[in-house]
Amino acid sequence: MINKTRTSLAHGVGLNIVSDERFKSEFFSISFLTPLNSRENTVSYILPSLLLRGTEKYPRALKLSCALQECYDTELSGESYRMGNAKIVRFGAAFISEEYTHIPLRQKVLDILRQVILYPLKDRSGLLCEDFVELEKSAVLDIIKTKINNKKSFAFSRCRDILLEGDDCGVSKHGSEETALELSPLLVTDFYKRMIRDFAVEFFYEGSADPTLITELVKDCFSE
Image 1 (tube, rainbow, N blue to C red):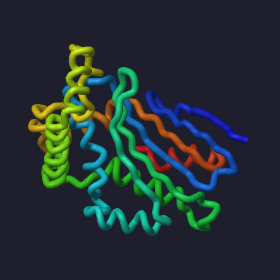
Image 2 (image 1 turned 90 degrees about the horizontal axis):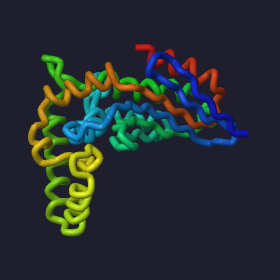
Image 3 (image 1 turned 45 degrees about the horizontal axis):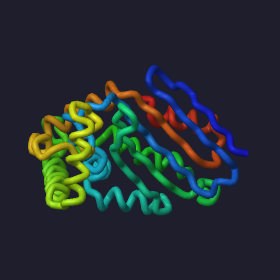
């Protein structure tokens, strides 16, 4: 029988659990929510993939990949999307149910997520890695330019701009070429710090584990 619960862990922090002993795999995610601001579309779009490039403990994508392979090839994901008038930045992990591994897999996976979200790779001045920022900046600029050169995509974008003129919902999730060119380690780091400090947070778990166990595990891993 599917059991659904939501627990308030702190002000602006919730834990949502969908548990069923029939699940053979598990999914855990952390979503940061804030009101839409079209000027921040580009920076919120690149942040998940930027943080997944490396952390203090796993400074390169290869090391992070090796850690995931040791966790039975756990898959990490990161994305930014809109829901109504909210912007959501989400990080997730999909992995085999711990009942089949005979190791504390949930603890290991949550620790990797914790490293990605709370301990990203920074330079000596405390800013997010400049090389990573430049790589993501180049990638999003390519996406924006490709959409402009694609007649179908450009026509759709223009229709949306006209219909939703003046509304933050009318701006592409990638932002504009202008906002992409503004990206810098300082700007991205400022957004990241505000996300951790000020955004509402929703934890989600889907799997076969007991809700009480998951609640305690989340509290332990993310007490910071």
